[in-house]
Image 1 (cartoon, rainbow, N blue to C red):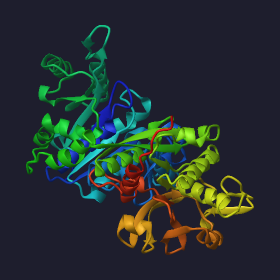
Image 2 (cartoon, one colour):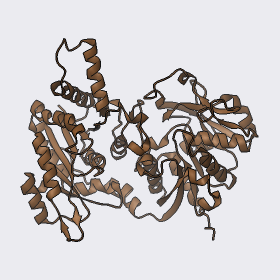
Image 3 (tube, rainbow, N blue to C red):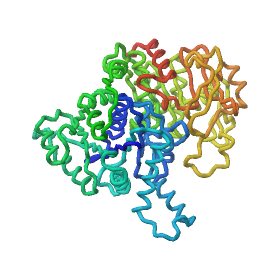
Image 4 (tube, one colour):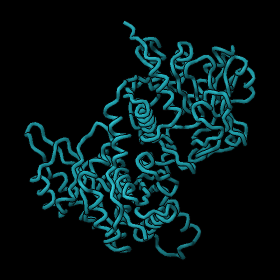
Length: 538
């Protein structure tokens, strides 16, 4: 039978429950245990697919095509697990399922209530995630902050697990804040006490406290937290701010968090020291030999989480190239107002990520033109590829009115157009081309040199594609269509001849990059950027 770890958060949001869960998963995996991780989101949206990135951050896409919370990205980057639609559940999904059953008459006239019907559906989904993964330990992160009304059904379901499976099979981890008050020069435990008190009122006594803090916790502070929160002193775990999030599993390991968890579950496993992780990931991340600056030209640069997986993928590529990647965030609308030469002064590479809508598109196109004409290494992702197509059509093919039908439905030259099967779709949620699809790579191409094989699988999230009517015109001017989805002859990868690194893809490679195995597109992009290193303009 699977063991269950529920991870909750208190005091404030954004304490790092996702990274905490992923780090626990990593240290348990290192002990030879099979783990699975799951996120419970309390919002009423069915999934984050229709939410603005400024509201929610990036949408992380799984292999099976689920649009999920960005924390699933942390789970996959820290562990060897591969998330599916079973690994993310929302209030919207739960209520939608229960109401649909009620409408069909499945409940035989009963009054439908939060307890037991909603909580039972939540528990069923957690158990389904456990069964589908075959994991020995399932980590369940509950979104939001203890005290939020939206999270109560999930917390109640978590409480019931210890009744259903016994306390030896369920463990509760609470992530909390222990602030340092600078003017008083004191560390305060009261917020943690109140947070745990609220959790206990709900019926959950945490077994482990993960204390986020900017200052070390003394033995006296830990004893105080232990006493007032009814948690063993050794289970009060210090989680200080770190230079790299990939240090966190090691910090947890040093405080024998894995031993505390295994002892609770009465499990015996192999020993582990995380030496490979420390040597191949952390040391390289903290002490690189080189530095390179990459311009990230996006529409949502005001929120780092909007491009979370891209930021991490660039860091992974840096690790692979023994380099620190410094990211220059460039709002694409700013490029429309300023000289590209000034914006990209001192930049060694330009990356244009995905997105939706016309705002800032001309700025992205302007950035791509600068990269193409000045031989600056360029990587385009999803919308970034579509913008590269529009730019090349206008500047190189003489199609001055080229555009995407997303931005101009009656464009004279629709070089990017809606996928045929998308034309009759009305519902926007979960209806894009989603998940992993095969791509056949052309031999003797840059893409083949990067991947080293003919057939790959990458994850998608889009509605628009390259219009095949324009292939001949593009090829005549030097574009290579080096990656094709064979089943429907769709363009997946384009690249430019006579350029050090100009490649754009319709998919999202950032979802498959790992700290100890950088995605080849990002790895080679940074390698090329390191060779480019420009001299700054005075």
